[in-house]
View 1: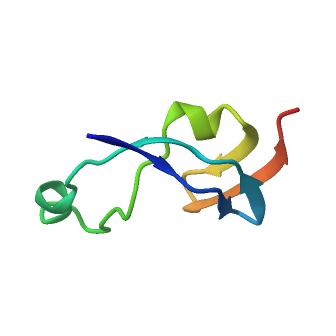
View 2: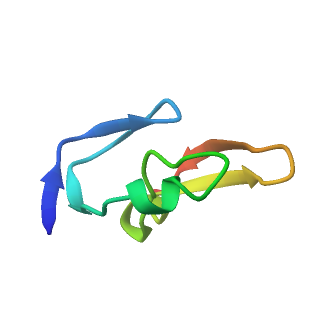
Length: 66
């Protein structure tokens, strides 16, 4: 199912309303050490310049893509 999410703030940056898909993560969360709250999709990832530091488990929004 899909819905329109209202504007949101991620990493201190404002993202406009966008279409989202709902997925039940409870099954996979039972099998992993660090449960997921959500998964960012392409529409949000495409709107910003992100820094993902996987070894240190850190992330940030460097700037919004304009």
